[in-house]
Image (cartoon, rainbow, N blue to C red):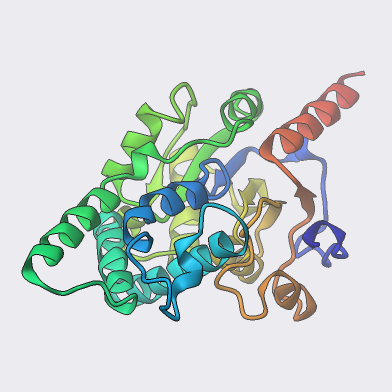
Amino acid sequence: MSDELPMPEPTVPRRPFSSFKVITYDIYGTLVDWETGLINGLQPLVARIPADSPHSIYRHSRSGAGRVKLAEKFHEVESQIQAGNPSMKYSQVLRESYLKLASEFGDDSSSSEAVVVEDEAQRFGAGVGSWPAFPDTVDACKRLSKYYKLIPVSNVDRDSFSETCAGPLKGVDFFRVYTAQDIGSYKPDLRNFEYLLKHVKEDTGGVEKEGILHVAQSLFHDHVPAKKMGLSSVWINRKGAGMGSGGGIEGVHQRGEVGYGWRFATLGEFADEVERQMAEEQR
């Protein structure tokens, strides 16, 4: 179990949470339930997989092993498309991922079926705004915003993120938003973190790397590059955090590829600890 792993050596020595000025967030997977959103969106596709297909495990993917395998498979395909097309809009990445999966799963390529798959792929790509927030997200963000400027750095496009802000994250006050579309590449590319450091300093009037706390679920997209950049970070240990990392969660820890300073099961638990420390310091 990932919550039983030993804590890594922190990249940056741990400090009181009051010493940070800015929280930079991963959004999809940390604040928004990326996995449920994509699993639901892929159901029309996987429902057509024949029972005798080598891909039949994906037919029953609402829960259990099928869900885990489908999320892993999607992540594999999506990462390949992002790496090969770093400036592609995220809604298009989703569409292309859907079509690639359809091809791999052996969907009928007849003209009538192709039209159906293309329509499904378009709707899948446009569906980011409907992906649900985790139950603790909005309240935790509101509490954290009392102490920090909140800045997402997200692997999506501006339109998709705007839909998320107007929907499941409505009421959360973000100071700035940095998307892959703004940056021209996708995490874990270090250019995304170089952009983050440069623009946080410019947009806040001088906050340096030492004043930034990066809060994220994904080890692959966020915590591995955060260590390379020398960023303090908090791991929100939601399920699926190891996808894309060789050997999964245990592998990146054993190889010393992550150096987060804190670990919490939810964003709400992180906000609880911030409030506890802040109250303690005021006594």
